[in-house]
Length: 217
Length: 265
Image (tube, rainbow over all chains, first blue to last red; front, side, top):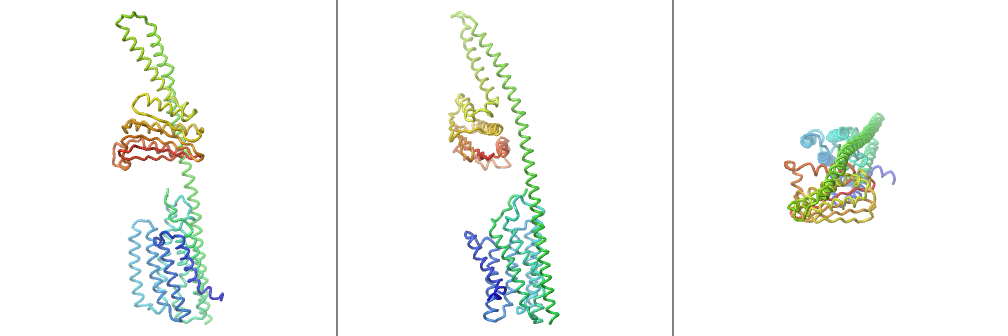
């Protein structure tokens, strides 16, 4: 029974986190983009798990959807926390370009029944860049409050760890599935452990009060 | 197959390396931000201390000047006028003399001038404000206003009065004088009420009037040219002693000014 836990980590952890997030932000959970991200992960990963482990059907189309939905939500989230000049405009342009790439990739290179390494790895690169921009802003304009008490800092750290850590897995996973490699499940279990780290960072974020860094000197 | 398994190992190793790098980045950002925050807080503390020193020096200079003027009024002009009054008293006139009315009126005028100068001397002298009982200093100030007949004044002390830091007591008193001055000048009020509240956590001074009041939004309008520096100075002085100043007013409903000084200050 214990060997099932690493396989289901990407289902159990977001579900528990979602319940906790809703309980903590009971007043207005819908206003926090990251709660939508957790909800999307919980929902899509659960369906993917049921398809793969119970119904024994391919769940790969769900990963296309997961990648797209996550990127949309996280782009919206970063547009609220990045404050450099024309940040919203630039994020909108990047989002539009990514959407074009996503659908071209789907039609020409990676069909819906294969793992979407291209779109996942490009999304990871973009999101890691956004995280670096966030850190850069914090280094250039540090606040007088403690960063470790900032909800946004822990959200971004979770996103940074997950997308930077999983980048190689995302980039190589399609090739390995096509080669029908043995012990491929180990690789996805490694991904699930990084996903658990993401959830732990998000848990820490939810424990913090929102908008800690209001007054920069 | 063995080679492919090696590729998976390579991917996992790369992933671990990336995780390590991300950890370094996060630790660097946290440490840097913490150090910078510490530096900014220290800078802010130095800036505040510097401003307080400047304010203290300014106040000392101002109070010394006022003290000198007060002494001059009391010891010099006051004495001269007392002598004039004494001389007038020694003038012997016959009951039917036409000058008797003028002399009597002059004696009364000189007496009033001496009393006014004493009051002025007392209000300029800060010793009774900074070292004496706070409520007594307020009562003296309100008595002077009451005597003018423009305003009905009242003072109420709630809680047990305790001594404050003399410098802070003086700054609070000067803020209160500015508020009272504004009421006399602008409010068209009939009564003025001062309440001093002492609790273990704070000292609160409330000054209210029943005058015309004003719109706070108009006060905050940056385009308004007649705004003056009095209110800005009041806020600045309150901030420097760690107190919170609030003004609540509406046209036609009077004004309430409250100054709260936490006990730890």
